[in-house]
Length: 289
Ligand code: NDP
Image (cartoon, rainbow, N blue to C red):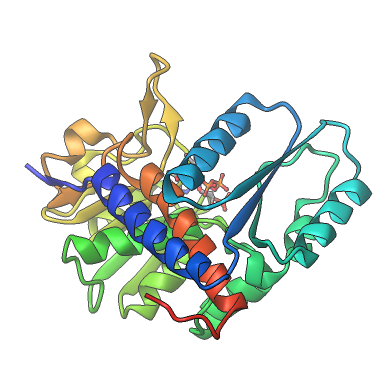
């Protein structure tokens, strides 16, 4: 049976470290505020935002919550971003995605000051990732790297397969694993479906982020592999599940993240780390922990 990678426990540790870093910065007069912008009435997004605000409270990170109506214009949203960019009390800006369809998300992401881009989605930060330069990294793959490290799973020389190539998970994940000397394969919706199982079977580290409930089954997994399930899906019964069929996968994998309790909590915790990192980047003179 696989070792269960306990994302909840690790996330609590990451939040604890973020709390210490934030306290250290604020003692030195460095502001650590997080602005969270939510546009529209999507209940799922509102739930995520509430959770992020709770995390801030737990870490002692001051937060400001901006709830904008569904009919907010691009101009109004851009003005708010401009204001937050110029506000020295705000270290990090997070615009909850997805935005309502009439808004241009790419323009919004590009407008955020890269030093305040705690989601790590700004082209400058993604460019730094490609170049191997330090910077703010997207929270989900950053959290996965942390989990691998804590569980002693060294990517160097391993075959890593990433299923999914989104800009927020799959692509940055592949770059982070590549930077740690794994050999990378990235599968996506154009990958030959007859080949997908074979590709997954080649993985020592398998990261699945395709949004298809329980797509990856036990027989697709190399015995002993580390299986990281990013998916947040609903099964036929409406129950939360991942992109991996946990019941069959845990019989074959060496280690595996559960859903819930795996990647999700770590993603949230890494946001708190990123707020501290953003404050540090804006105040290089501050002493770091
Ligand atoms: P996207 O919808 O942006 O991307 C899905 C990716 O999967 C695409 O690259 C797509 O390929 C690929 N894909 C779709 N179908 C297949 C298939 N049959 N075989 C192989 N690849 C396929 O999703 P996200 O990356 O944003 O999220 C993926 C999952 O992770 C979702 O369940 C989401 O809810 C969850 N998630 C969880 C987070 C967490 O914190 N736990 C954070 C972010 C996401 P193509 O590019 O060709 O379309």
